[in-house]
Image 1 (cartoon, one colour):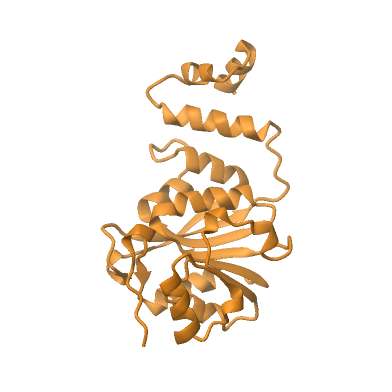
Image 2 (cartoon, helix red, strand yellow):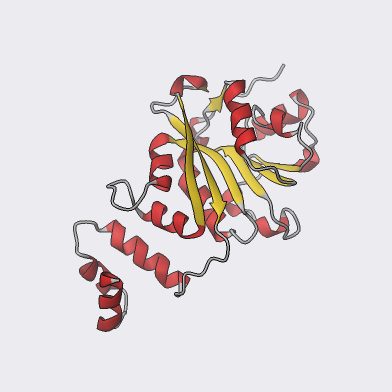
Length: 234
């Protein structure tokens, strides 16, 4: 039997509790197309393949790919041995909608969220595992010190829910902190009524320099004084 050694460089922490794995899979709204990110040794995949869905997997670790093929008999045709962050998601399901699920590599989990947002036209829902602190930041509400860039940008396009916490002892190797499973469900008829690139710049500048006033932070952007005042006081 093959064995996959978790790789620190890839942020791998393999979930080893089947009950939690099934709960994650069942948290995803029934759909017909699903992409799993970072399946590792397939603890989520085992439950996904029981469902009547078109399933695809993206796994950057070749050892994990070999394990999925030879130990779980997963068809190599549905596995993409690639970096998710560099993939053209529009091509995966021929520009059809699909949901995303995964026990995400912790070192790129925030980048995964931003990639999902960039491709939100195809992705109505995501259910995934994050470090607890990251999960909190994504789902945090306005007024909290944890409310920041990823909170604002994610919640502009998706409804967020922190579903449940997962203790660090349920992973191999055990991370230093607990994790949490969150859900993102795309908002309908999104209209920010603004230039989205400018919106992203303003959000990032406003939170990157918290000790500065928003007025001073926005001076880096070539905005008119009137527009800057509208943003500050809206």
